[in-house]
Amino acid sequence: MARRAGWQVNNKRIRRLWREEGLRVPQRRRKTRLTGIGVAVGAMSPIRPNVIWAMDFQFDTAADGRTLKMLNVIDEFTREALAIEVDRAINADGVVDVLDRLALTHGAPRYVRFDNGPEFVAHAVADWCRFNSAGSLFIDPGSPLLTG
Image 1 (spheres, rainbow, N blue to C red):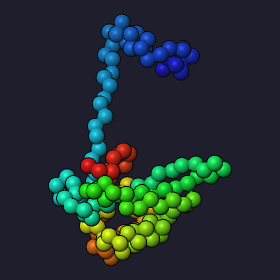
Image 2: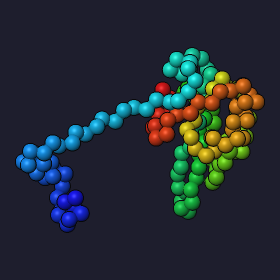
Image 3: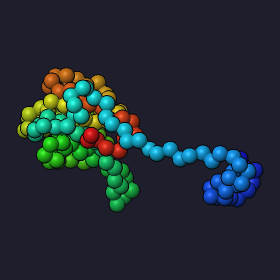
Image 4: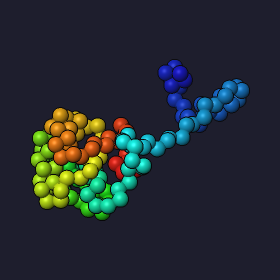
């Protein structure tokens, strides 16, 4: 409210004024680590290779200023990068193509872990998981970690 009234003050001065007036200073809340939403199979830690694959996107900019999109797929047990697909745009069909290619060389995983991005929640990816008998594990929105 002080800033809206035109005062140029920092947080430390506001806290000091609160204490001088006998007001209770709000306590900072600690952030709690979010855990993934999944099926009840322990903490969903992989016990052998090819059980859980984790997928996520990274973005970069090329020299011409255009965006590059990278789909990374890793095996959570071996930490092996199974695929790094780079393109200007990767949609759900592109994700399914990468999964098909990996399933031919490595076999289909038991579970696939990803966030709630539009490419991953699409029907095409859900259909791929169903046809290949792979469960889908979603991480919590805003969680920085794919692995638990």
